Length: 212
Image (cartoon, rainbow, N blue to C red; front, top):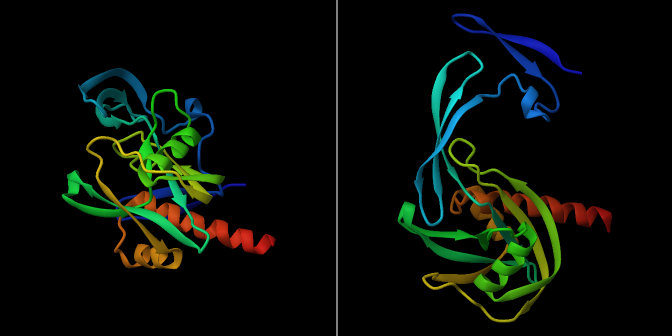
């Protein structure tokens, strides 16, 4: 059951709705939803598309929304028998520096997140996994992109050989999982998908220990 409270501001009282789940299951009935009036592609690249839509907000304002369309991606957290995890050090051009991150890649047309994860793990690290567990999915840039990333845990690894794409240059490294968590907390690792995945894996491993 939801309750209502008010916060007093300098100009007016703002109602704050409190509840356990504020997600609207039916977007068509969402009072905050914007009405799409016109949709178009402002730029189409080889990877991303920039959409420019005209919408009408719930208070009647007609405005423009620009966002990047992304095909979606999968990220893999591969764990070796000794408890260390496999990561990649990769140069990211938008920020002009290297990042430490878990293996990941975009979905090909018609490809499922699971099949993408299996393919990317072999291509980027050279490992295939016998055990897979989906940890969850998240939207990492809701203000300007529709990208969705699905996160998988992979173990029982076997090295079969790396198969990088042309122009894909990266270092494959291993770190103890507690060290990855430490670097996420200290700010040394700043890649958001890696941070999310690390703490999801920590929770999964704790759950596994409790069930033993």
